[in-house]
Length: 166
Image (cartoon, rainbow, N blue to C red; front, side):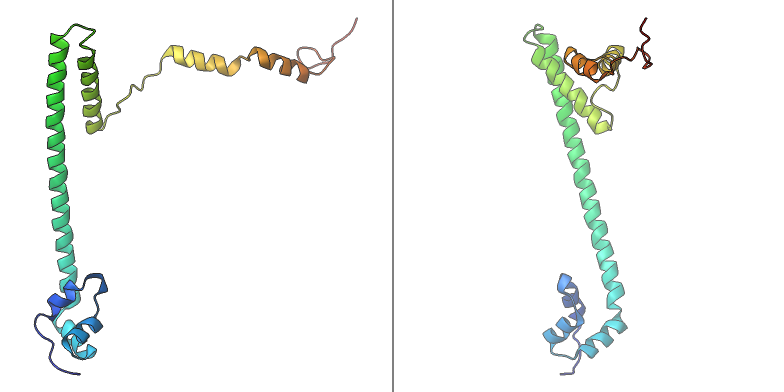
């Protein structure tokens, strides 16, 4: 089972994909595995394969980048169309029936901010909200007052010291 490895053996080797091996090439061409190994070393199959895989990754990455760019352009055009219709609706219709236009404008603004990487919700904290949160943290409800009183020790004053009876 010795012979010469054909010229298209490297192409067959590459086409094997994840199941690629010198043994598979040897079986396919009816030659000894050592013959395939010598041929692979002489023709630098591993280096050539690495280069092919690198180029394939670059081509796939370039295609993905183009597709992402096309998607971005498409989305931007849709947003412009939505914004245009929203503006027309806001100008044309009275406030009650123009609310759909206002909602569309709000949606367009949020989507544009999302695409630009900006937050879509308001991040400001109102003084009223902070005050409400602080008050709820420090005040106790009526149902909690009884439990608070039960836990208190009898005979202690406000500061936790014994009350002095006179």
